[in-house]
Length: 250
Length: 329
Image 1 (cartoon, rainbow over the protein chains, first blue to last red):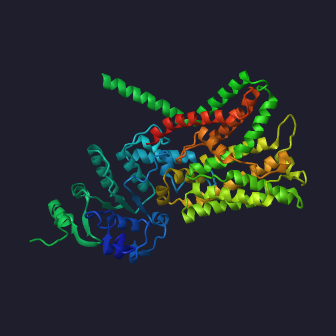
Image 2 (cartoon, rainbow over the protein chains, first blue to last red):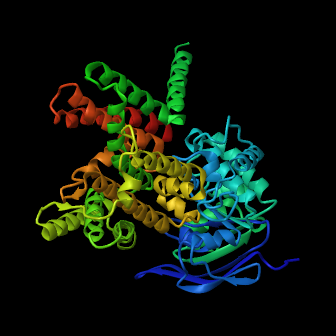
């Protein structure tokens, strides 16, 4: 039943000076599944995401993407390998417009050099299509990102990742700053996205992730204390595990 | 009812701001025309071709530095050493032109200024010193060195006429090549900023360095390139000025760094980075040159130039902040 996983991490350790943020975490993520990465503050969730997106190097351990060992020395390499990250600030620069943000680092140009001429028309067209595909209505993709609501910005980030054919989407607290109505829309979008990409979803809010995740990986102070399929665990049990730090029941 | 009216007002205000934001050059263009008209009335012989070419000559030299400073500020840094690099460029050019063809002297001078820019960039990016501090220190080091070397004496230009001819010597009717260099570079860099991937990276680096990095932009490379560019433009401006005066003095370029920054701010650049346009910065330089000449022709003491520029600076900064900042948040 289980074909080879999209992502396999083996014994990932990360220290910052004397502080050990991750003490040997291993797990897999299958194609097109939503894995929730949960745990209390300081558990190491963000550190793990930063390692996968190429911001940090692991102190020890290996990462395998589609069976091949990978080593990211730059965020750019992680992106090129198909891992896109959406941070809490939506990964969008508010002083720039939508299309410039959309194509940042991947600008469409006649040649591939940094001083070549941008293909503005194509960029506007494709961006507009991608934006409409995630249900956002703007007069023009030359509007500043700041005219979009939090949920819309989140949708742009996710839409961007999909447009550039991400294989794995890392979502770091995607719903943290959203209003109730927007939470539902973005959750729907994440569910839609999971039909084409695998998703690693970090959240504090167990209720939010429970509704859409397939599997839960629980971290506590740098180690993985539990891993459950949704059918094997309830929200209350997850919350209890996180707050007590222990999996075993009475 | 009241709530509806308030929303309408807010929407209208927002839209006006947006129009201004979408066309930032509109504001500075109007200001430039307005000031030109003003001085035409109160200044004797201000409204003349002669006067216009004089204005343009000054604007061309300051303008080159303003262009470089504009790109740098948009990417999130400052360069306070541009006046010193301007003087350094002129000094090296004059010194080497005494025994080398002017073409070679020019290349050596520009090369050295580019190198100084490179040092500014490396210190800021790799060592992590804020650019304000790096370039302030560099300014003092350069000026101090120049003073030590020349003892404050002027050095006459004794080279051939090749470079002066293609840089600044009057072609006819008061028009100089530097005017065309200014316009060409203005258009060139505006194009690079708005229509190339590099330009996008410049805006991103200044808008949010962390996000830019996460999206794969080589932020360090962008910053260093911008510092080198700044050095080249400052050196070029210095050589232009020296070709015009036919002598160099280390006092040249004093306070020009502040004028360059003022030109940028008047032209719509936000000091916080990420926002700005080069045409506006060029017009800012033009505006300041107009005021410089205008106040004299209007009969006011030459020193009042600083007074007026100061007022224009604060006013335009206020207008820009009110419109841009609100929209960006």
